[in-house]
Length: 70
Image (cartoon, rainbow, N blue to C red; front, side, top):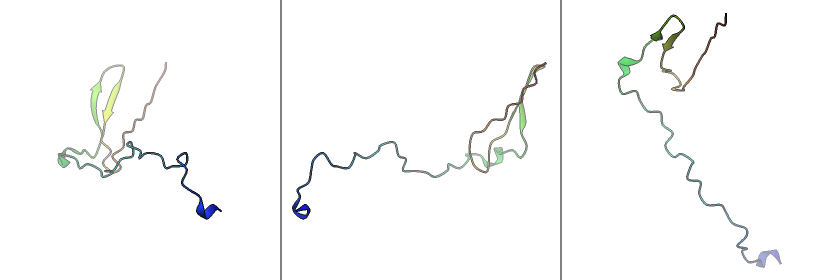
């Protein structure tokens, strides 16, 4: 009897997910000479020092924060 069953409209596949990316390639740096080996200080005040270095290996945003409370 199940071999002769007709399709049921309640049982169907969901619509395609429009938020699944199709292009997963990493973008190349527009200026490869701008990639620094060591971090550079971009802000230096008596209260703080801010360093910056691009992640050349994995291209992921990352932050390290150190606080000294006195």
